[in-house]
Amino acid sequence: MTTGKGAAWWGLLGFSFLFISALYRLWIPARQLEPHTFSIMDWSILICGILFMGYVKGHCIFYRRFAPRFAARTYYLMMHSNRLHQILAPFFCMSYFYTTRKRKIVTYSLTLLIVALIVWVHHTSQPVRGIIDASVMVGLTWGLFAVWRKTLPVLLGKTPQESPETPEKKRDFNR
Image 1 (cartoon, one colour):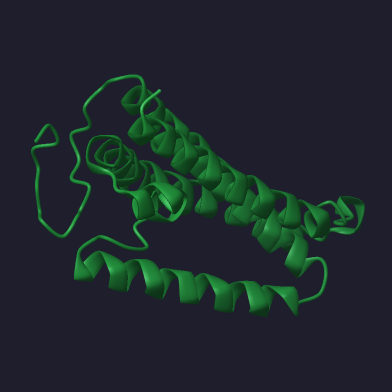
Image 2 (cartoon, helix red, strand yellow):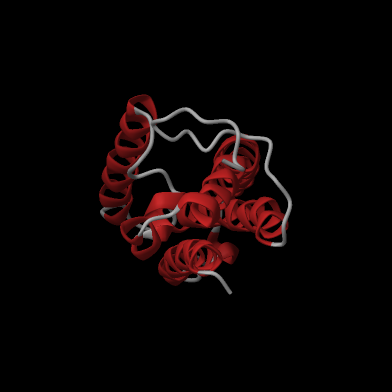
C-alpha cells in the first residue's frame, strides 16, 4: 500500500473513530430517557427532532455536501499528499487546513457553533437533553454512513467528481 493510500485510509478511519466516539458520548444521556414518562409534547419533539436532524443534518449537510468533499479530499490525499497531510489525514479530509479561505471560515465557524451547542445541551436536563442527543445521533449516524458510502469507492479506485477545495483550485486529480 502506498503512503498516500495508507494516509487516505487513516483519514477515513480517524474520522470514523471521532464520530463513533461522539455517538457513544451521546448514547449515554440518550439511553437515560424514560419514554413511559413522555407527554404527547415530548413524543412530538422527539419525532420532529429525529426527522429534522435525519433530513437536514444527515442528508442535506452530510450526504450532499460534506461526504462528497471528504471523498474528494481523500482522493487528493492519495495523489498529492505530503508528510504533514498524511499525519493529520482525518483533519485534512475534514477541511481543517490546506483548503480555500472560504472553506476554512465555514469549517471553523461550524466547529465553534457545534462546541457552543454541546456546552449548552450539556447543561439542560432530561428529557430535553436526551431528546436532543437522540436526534443528533440520527444525523451523525447518517453522516458516518454517507462518508463511508462516498469515500469507499474512491479508496477502491473511483475518481470523485467533486472538488477537494484545495488552495490551488485544481480539478484535475491526476496531475
